[in-house]
Figure 1 (cartoon, each protein chain N blue to C red):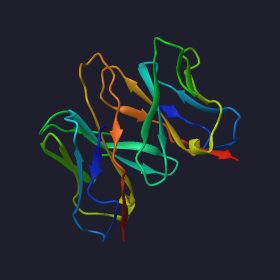
Figure 2 (cartoon, chains in turn purple, brown; figure 1 turned 180 degrees about the horizontal axis):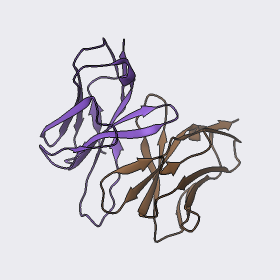
Figure 3 (tube, each protein chain N blue to C red; figure 1 turned 45 degrees about the vertical axis):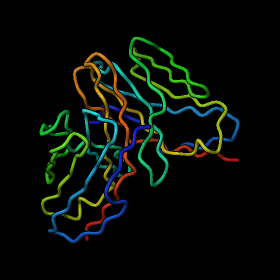
Figure 4 (cartoon, one colour; figure 1 turned 90 degrees about the vertical axis):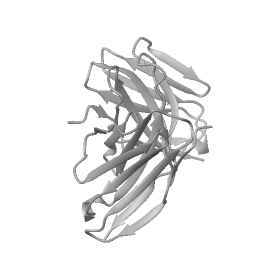
Length: 116
Length: 112
């Protein structure tokens, strides 16, 4: 079974703090994703990575950065946390066997971040 | 601009009856569609998918129907069970892109 783990389930931070959210997958997946989920908005893609040291902006990258130094680990960084970044953050991974085939994304349990 | 829309925020269905969740999309370049299920305090889990070359895909109690001309897909759950109570997300993908475009979700409540 694919396992995607996230470093924290709940996190409380203060405005202006630097926040690190870690995600690790154990299935040697090439692709990794960071989403945030807000009520009524569904999942919105922040950043994704299709290889080590590669990253691509998603729909809402502003205020975030990412790091992928190892294949299994994808980190989301909030450089200076703000109250509008209070949200549920979900990490996902998928394996792209071939560009012509379809991959399924597997999700971690999520990190609920509260910025005060 | 929401390319994938789930217009019903919630749906309540009697146990044993059919649940029908709907999803509309605007981009004709989408060629693969997925349904995910999410319980509170857990990440979404993959449920069922359909390629645009098909109009139906079935897996046990779950069937997804795709109407390309109407840009509409639906998820049928029959019979509905209490464990089906969850938020259901519809997602779509363009062939050339790794990204999934997600709907806002529909909360399904199965009444005993």
